[in-house]
Image (cartoon, rainbow, N blue to C red; front, top):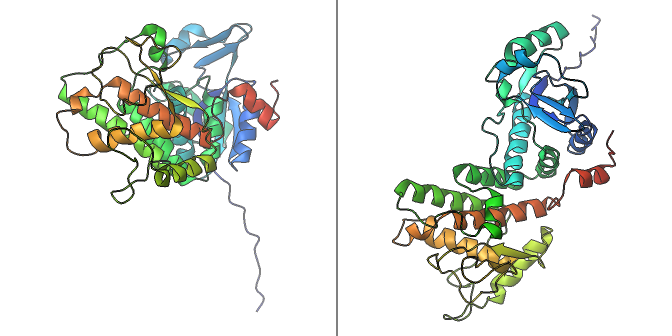
Length: 369
């Protein structure tokens, strides 16, 4: 009896629309970033036609019905490039969700009301694709999923850097969910605006949202193994009336920060505005920022360990357990501070703190077209 060995057919990996749109001069950089994370990527001209790019800037449509009014792009405009991913559905969905979550972290505010949550499998037949483009992507619903943000290239780079570190992935998602629960725009915290928000509220539901946002943000810090590790046997401080770090707690924290690539010389602004009705954490750490006036703007500068310690105090003493009479003293400024500390730690661990697209081009040797 003769056994005939038939050649194995190589399985074709499905191709998914990511709904992530990039400027034409960014797409080569994005492919380089994807390759570094072992993501198989392609691109096509954005079939939604939601965005048009030119040297003068960007035009954007909010509704699919507006497509009939614009027809083709004007002279000097061109559509963006849509990122396609070749992988199984679960992996594609995880990549898209991670990029979108990281973009929230990067911007410090959930600007996109309709972020994509999964990929859309595309046929390998061009005729079928055109039907999908016309009848699905250019209709309200999926149309709003197509996303362009100036920060997206860096968000992709951070997601790629985190891809092999499940704890870092969870940290990004937790912090993004914190921002979605409650946050304020980053620019509203600029000292020139002084106190823009009421520090406290009598709204019980708001107290819950504030506490959940703080819990999630500090939990993101803990996912990075950068929380304060103290106990009854090994307390964080020496002395009762003045705060002085216990070296047995501080030195291991510093070592973990260094191993995570965090610049410990950097000082962090802890935003404190308006009257002195906020929670008194450690008032003896009262080094005012350069822009503080000591009255309405009383921002303080903290070392990274002290800032983490402040966050842990708010979480452990005020939000993680049953509420107390002090709970209503928490507000948008405490939420912002805890989120900003976690954001700094995540971006630092990814070695992408204060890094933007032009710096990415140098790292990946990808000059603009």
